[in-house]
Image 1 (cartoon, rainbow, N blue to C red):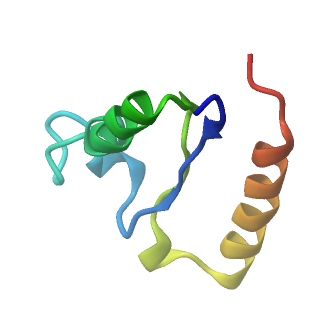
Image 2: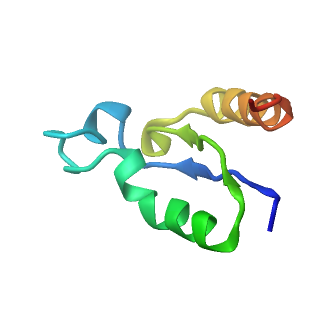
Length: 79
């Protein structure tokens, strides 16, 4: 209770497929609603998730860059 909750998520497909009308039919926000509901239930502050799209097509350089971005994202202050 009183802590922050942030998810780090990777997807196999590109971001365009995770939106209304996209191939996966739902946005990342919609898919993560159960986690947000759990956060509400347990009294944590739900923070925007970090999402790495397109892992199935990622190069080693893409993965390395995403890891760096995730580390930066975790360290940023959330208002």
